[in-house]
Length: 402
Image (tube, one colour):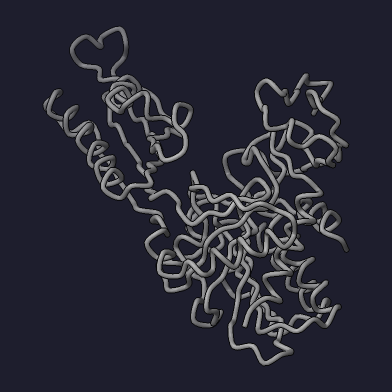
């Protein structure tokens, strides 16, 4: 199969992860794709293929030359829990400019006004959604690119060292590296293929934490509620108002951090809000966490009782300090891109990858592009030409080690 055919096959598997689950992987649906990938890896000639008890899939391309360096390639199988990832109906569009109608019946249109980057894709084949689901290019495009590069390399017989491949569950909920067998993987370094636009290289990412805010109110019949009722929903609003309104995702870019309220549920008696906290700078990151805790303390003092409790958990850290001593792997990736006619563009990730946590576990693991954009929503798309080019970049990396 070529890279497009693989991608379309992989997105047919619903693999949404679930941060509320305590199982590993967080959803059983991810195991179905893992089993399929393990079978496919064996069929194309990879060895030592296995899917472990946690849903991690590993495989090896044995070396056929006297090359000592062991390189790895990693992508994740799950899709974001923030949007529908079932019954995906991808369609291919030859893009000649202008707006793209995703769903005429529902009036869902991807407009150049909202997404001006579309203009860069004129003349390319884009795979888009039908406007009711995400696409799953994050990160099934990465899986397709790695698998196709691996198959073409094995078939070509080109000289190469030991190459390891791994596909992880639960990256989207920050757990993708939790049970990763770094020692068994046995690589000198690796790349996550989990980025965006063609040419992107990323070795700086957010420091990340989750914040759960639980508000306990007092529910009294509204007819007799005077001086008795404490509406937890309104207290939750008051808490949210204490966090800087300009420091939300919709108002930030580049190195600017944020507080993001991505879920709220409740009633008069109890309300729970779930935030994510992000910042590239470690000191600013720590201050953000402290501000979140201080806001709760302020409200508790104001009302003279403990209405709010907060739980803050670190998710991952900025990989930059772990990559800087190994900048040769960034240079190798840049060279591989240039050899394939792509100008590399080093940018910070406004998010995270498995590579961040893996770098802190001793496996230097920067991130590279997949060719998609607008991840985690109905306007997600990926370029077929970009996927093909990234597949070639991966092959160049596979054959350029010493």
